[in-house]
Amino acid sequence: MAQITNIRCVLLSSAYADADDPEIKECFPNGPKRTIGMVEVTLDNGVTGLGEGYLAVFAPLVFQAIVDLCRPQVIGRDGFDIDRRVKDLRSLCDYWSLQGAARHVIAAFEIALQDAKAKSLGVPVYTLLGGAQAQSIQIYGSGGCCDAKEQFLRELDMLGSLGIEIYKIRSVKRDILRTAWVLEEAGRRGIKVGVDMCQNLADPPQAVEDVVAFVEAVHAITDQRMVFVEEALGPDQPDAFRELRGRIDVPVCGGEIVTTPKEMIERINADVYDFVQPDASVMGGISAVMDVFEAAKAKGTDVVVHAWGGAAAIMASYHAAFAADGKLVEYPMLYFPLGAEMIGDQGRIENGRLIRPTAPGLGLTLTPDMEARYPFDETAVYSCVLTDWGPPPDSYWRD
Image (cartoon, rainbow, N blue to C red; front, top):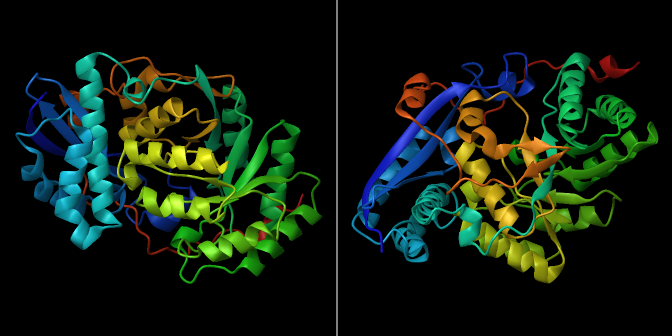
């Protein structure tokens, strides 16, 4: 037993991407800076653990308030009994947030406890989950938030330098020539392309017919083929996703917004996606992602973990993938120095593959000096009220 003696909410803000990236123009009204929110758990053996909830990217003060609410539920309890602590937190939060915001915060607690327990035992987190099933996992580059050809070419050069052979871009249904241009440029370099259609933020989202028309139009002007289409429909439309799978010959994926393993497993069993994308910082922690891997294996569905938060969120999903024999993971490409500094050499990529981390816990570093250099900025939030930034017309992408 290791008693929990302190819980600290850590909000930090860091430079992110650059001002010319469409994601910044569309979703960051106060410029290229992003916030992350973490829970730091301290045990009576002096060990601390870090966990992250994705909520803080969007609503950091809400994240902080829920952490404050949850703190008394775990102080003085056994930090090694992670399942019991999650049940305790759910008993506090499920009535008013069975899905959604509280699950992100519970995820932060669960991940922090996994990190603290593993560090106390001197082992990586995946060891607590049964051990790593591979020495490395193939990784795909997640970027493609680009308005200009030189931006895409810079990202393709980055992928080439790392040996990464799959590239995810963001496209909406009007981006036919743009998408085909990227497919051609990437194909010349031996890189395959998947497309995120960004419908998690669309209201109302596009219809199945829109996606079918987009895929057919792109494939009509290039011999290159998309390797997957992600979040192509509204997140609350599982039946439409299943219909889409029968209408196109491109794998259909999604699920990064799903906040409980129960809902994700229901979607797996209902054949909603070709592969699913759980995120440990969204779904309630690492153990929740492990539940999804187990159900997906029984169904024959692939799992590709989502990783778009800060360092603790990314590494939590990576450790789950190593323990569950994941075959592909996401690598966020946009500039985020705080995340890179916290991960250090534990996120090493060689020949397009993520090398198994070896440090105890999640393998993260967070020092007082780092916290001082990345102070919380209340204005550095991701806004889901999308701004029309005036992207170039699709005709720009004609050669």
